[in-house]
Image (cartoon, rainbow, N blue to C red; front, side, top):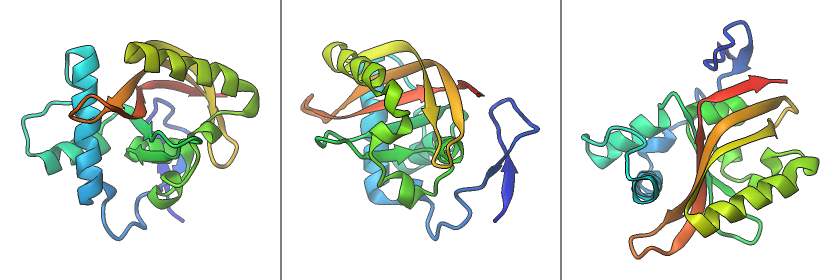
Length: 176
């Protein structure tokens, strides 16, 4: 297993490289390209600005989102929502390869004691379209705890405006 330095402002902490074993880059899959557009369009809808620069074609936008320096994650609308997107930095933070990350219930990103607060924040994002300024503890697949600060959560909608998921982005976290 290859180790890579965490790009989260803590250069002395090493993390597993969770993307080197992929046969195909996740951002290049047509379903991921389409979902990336939903993430980006919904962000623009609720916040009136773009999450990333969108001058490139949709596949290159998907790649730019995947390679973004900010964490971007999302889940669907299942009764127990599954994660369905995590960019490169998210995969490293949660210490999972793509195929395992997108099969994980999103509630497992938080410890059991923090899930009520997480659920309330997601409900507020559902009511208002987005929630800015979330702060909370998350846990990686290996049990590493980290504090997320200044997270923005938004409702992902389809072209008809129907909610199809929720997403979050943040670029500030610290290991506990």
